[in-house]
Every structure is written in C-alpha cells, then in structure tokens.
Image 1 (cartoon, rainbow, N blue to C red):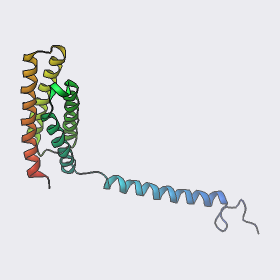
Image 2 (image 1 turned 60 degrees about the vertical axis):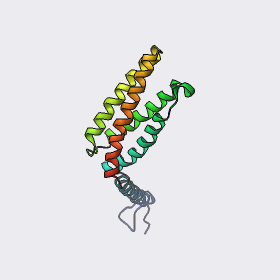
Image 3 (image 1 turned 90 degrees about the horizontal axis):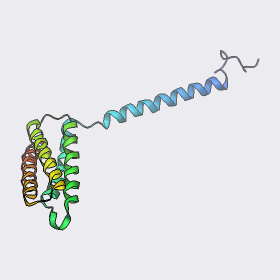
Image 4 (image 1 turned 60 degrees about the horizontal axis):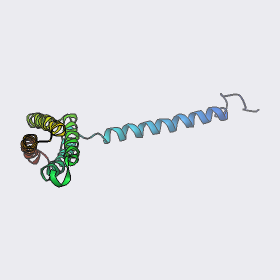
Length: 153
C-alpha cells in the first residue's frame, strides 16, 4: 500500500509535512518577536532618565558655546539637539517632571525665536537677546535636571 497522495495515511504527503514544519517555525518566530517586543519597551521613567542624560550633555554644550569663535552654526546645532531631547522627554510618557518639561519647552521656543532674529539681523541687541534666551534654556534645563537627579537612579 502506498501513501503518496493520501494525507490520511502515515503523516501525509511531503507538502503537508513541510506545511506543518513551516507553521511550527512561523509560530516560534512570532512568539520570540512578541517576547522581544515586550522586553524591549522601556518604562516611561526609564526612557525619561535615558533622555535626561542626553539633555545634560547637550545643555552643557549649549552653555559652553563661544559664538565668536564657533559661529552661529554651533548654536543652531546645540539648539537642535536640545529640541530633540525635549521631544523625546515629551514622548517618554513620563509625568514625573511635566511642569519642568513645559518650562523648558517655553525657553526653547524663546531661544529659537531669538536665534532666528540674530540670523536675520546681526546686532548687539539681537546677540544680547540670544544670550538671555540661552540663560533661560540653561536655567529651565537645570530645574528639569534637578528633578531628574531625584527621580532617576
């Protein structure tokens, strides 16, 4: 008695056995992906803390810029990095420092406006406004980083 073409006899055809193997492998891959996806999702506080470390570095870079020797491009680069950190803090979903994040957001908007004015009209007054706005960002970030120091391990 031959079993070719008769799936009800002794394990079925090669195609059916291959299909069962494919289903088993696919199931294993999906299960691993699900476990990896869950394990790779940091908590809002963990994401907040990791971004806070980046913010600390980027604010220090902003504070240390010498526009005369480094030019305004360095200010634009530092501002973009801080904006990115701020967006990540907002997206972290953490409510740990919502007020401090909002204050930093306001300060970054102010610095962005001052920076644009400086680019359009280089003057002593515009440079002074940028300096004041940089101080506002550094101070607001300092309050946020103080909160971070008490929250993050």
